[in-house]
Amino acid sequence: AARLQLRGVQKAFGETEVLAGVDLQVHEGEFVSILGPSGAGKSTLFQLLIGGIRPDGGTIHFDRAPLHNGTARFAFMPQRDALMPWRRILDNTTLGLEVQGMDRRAARAKVAPLFAEFGLQGFERHYPAQLSGGMRQRAALLRTIVQDRDMLLLDEPFGALDALTRAAMQRWLQTMWKRHRWTALLVTHDVREAVFLSDRIYVLSPRPARVLHEFHVPLPRP
Ligand code: ADP
Ligand code: ADP
Image 1 (spheres, helix red, strand yellow):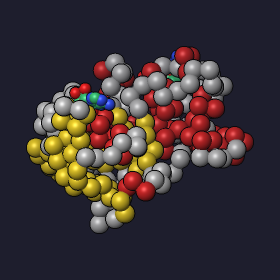
Image 2 (tube, protein in one colour):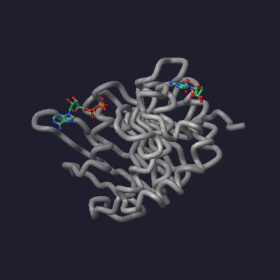
Image 3 (cartoon, protein in one colour):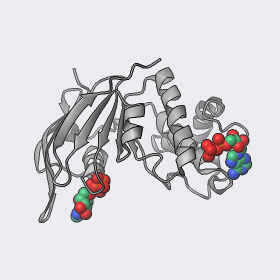
Image 4 (cartoon, helix red, strand yellow):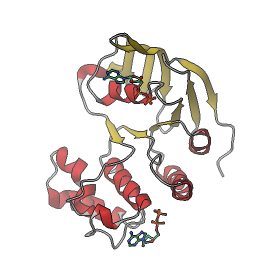
C-alpha cells in the first residue's frame, strides 16, 4: 500500500487555480520526483503536506489516515537558506532534533557520527558562511534525515548550486539513497535530475496543475 496518497487534490488561491486535481502516491523506500515548470504548483503541493493549508477538494492520506490530523511525518529540506548563519554547523544539524524536543547534548551525539558520511568532518565548529554551497546543502540534508521522519521532502535541493556542484551532489545523493533507502519526494524542474535520482516521476502540466504523465525510470541501478 502507498504511504502517501493524493487523490484529486485541488487548490486555488482566490481566482488563481493552482492544482486542478492531482493524483499521486509514494511507497515505502521509493524515491519519487514531481517534475513541472516554474509556477506549476510544486511548492503548493508541499505546503499542503507540511504548511498547514488544506486542499479545496480531494484527499491526502498517509498510511491510510487523513493527513490533516496533524502528526508531523515529513522532514523538509528547502532549496536554500536552510541554515542559520549564527549557529555553527554542528548546532545547525541538531536544530530539527531540538525542535522535536531532544536536548542539545543528545542531539549532538546523534548527528556527530554522521558528519564523515556527509563530507563535513572537521567542519563541525565552522559557520555556514565558511562552507561551500555543496557543503551547506549536505548539512541541510543531514539535519533533515537525522529526524527519522517517515518521508523526506526535497524542494529543489540543488537548484541554487552551480552546475558542477549540482552534478556532484546528485551523484552523492544517489549513493546515499542506495545505502539508506529513504522514502523521498523531490520537486524539481530539472529533467535530468529527476531521471537520475528517481524510481518514478510525475510530470505536471503548467498551472493549473494535473499529472500529465507518470513513468517508472527504466534505468537499472547498479
Ligand atoms: P512552483 O513551486 O511549481 O513554482 P508554486 O506552487 O510556488 O509553483 O506556485 C504556483 C502558483 O500559485 C503561482 O502562480 C503562485 O503565484 C500561486 N500561489 C502560490 N501560493 C500562493 C498564495 N499563498 N497566494 C496566492 N497565490 C499563490
Ligand atoms: P562542493 O560539494 O561544494 O563542490 P566539496 O565539499 O566537494 O565542495 O569540497 C571538497 C572539500 O574542500 C571539502 O570536503 C572541504 O574539505 C574543502 N572545502 C570546500 N569548501 C571549503 C571552504 N569554503 N572552506 C574550507 N574548506 C572547504
